[in-house]
Image (cartoon, rainbow, N blue to C red; front, side, top):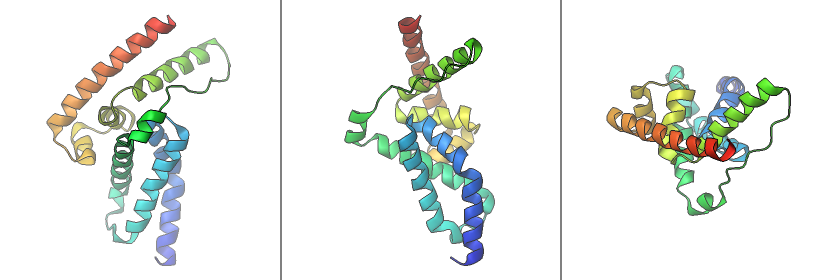
Length: 169
């Protein structure tokens, strides 16, 4: 890569690093794994940087690489054995904030119990804001598959969150 390409990549990385890491966290529920997934996506992007003619498509390329890496990783037997539903305790800062944090943590914990492909669909639809067509492109599947995975994922999440409410309530 020439100096200009390196500079463009560095600027893109600096601008997108945090958002890609947050999306990775939503996909896997662990900050260390999220860092690994984000790194995987950025390394793959760096390898292809000169070949990407349409810079507007860069976000889509990173998103697709990230989601596929998260799904592939979740299929590894050793990864399934080590998964944990525990999240660190939030710092206490007032009742309203604590309620909001508890709700967010319940949602994240519940999301981790949704199967990986359904979790990816939910994260892409509701966190990344992609439409059905956009999710289908990222996952390389039909729009009908995205719709059914969304419905199943939401049902699974509702079931899991119902358990959480019964356990904590």
